[in-house]
Image 1 (tube, rainbow over the protein chains, first blue to last red):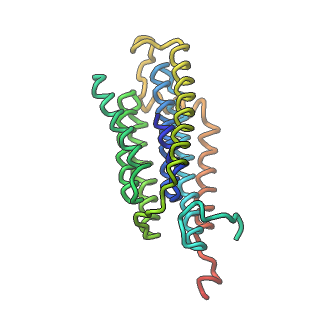
Image 2: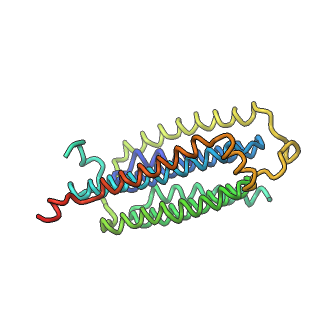
Image 3: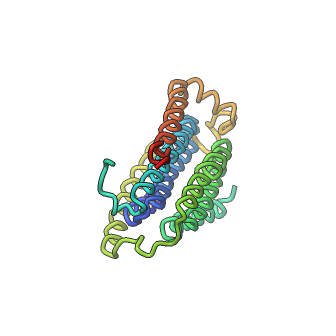
Length: 88
Length: 173
């Protein structure tokens, strides 16, 4: 359910920052599923995986926001549909 | 831990997620995201993962959202009326996401119902969810991954700095 809402956000918004937040929601949905199943099984491996997901999410947020900054500097926009070039 | 409270928090979590996707102003979205992350942390605590709940608040609500707000304010973003896609695309997105969520939900449901449950606190190991037990799992079974994440974070930081940096020539000119 959370995953679905995040997916809707990724598809429908054009502001890349909001798209990013939607991706975070999807990651959190995965984390919640991991924790729930770990609780269900009484097995803590899921907790370790969640820790790694959090780490990767933090790294991804740092990289992504750096990309957004560079993009805004070059194009003066944060609309995902106005960016068509992958090279500068 | 009463179930109605848990479901109440779950409903609030979904509501805040809808708010993140639906609000127009990016700053409001970021604030809704903070609420959402706190509510997820509450769910973690309900599910016995207290360390994860604390880490969720520190890492996400503390670091990641601050990063988001920082960039939003740096770019001086306001509400963008043209931000939203057309109704056709929204309908298609909701349909696709519902199908995807259905598939994921069925898979998770099967995984939960097929597997042998640990029993409500019966077969569960002593100290489930405690930091000690967590450290045991982390450093016995996931040591390599743990060390790799440190390299990953270093690479991410260096990459972020390189990308966000102004070109020296450009800055002068």
